[in-house]
Image 1 (tube, rainbow, N blue to C red):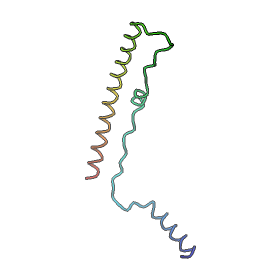
Image 2 (cartoon, rainbow, N blue to C red; image 1 turned 90 degrees about the vertical axis):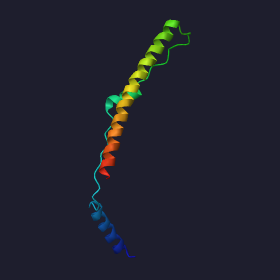
Image 3 (cartoon, one colour; image 1 turned 120 degrees about the vertical axis):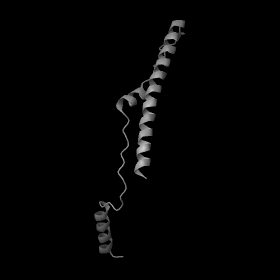
Length: 95
């Protein structure tokens, strides 16, 4: 195949690349909201220092961990709802 033929085929391919040959629906997934991303990245810090934890420190740490778990559960529930809505949209669009 000569170089001029290859160049011609490439130009034709580039011209057709912008053409939509099927009637597939355009689907855009929902972006993860920034507050859910922030919630997922938020962590309870580890206790500082080498000293043994007092009973009060342990209670505070457990309370902080429980609060963090509750917050993450709420964020996860919202993320699951977003995913399920997107999945339903994709299924509907592909019918």
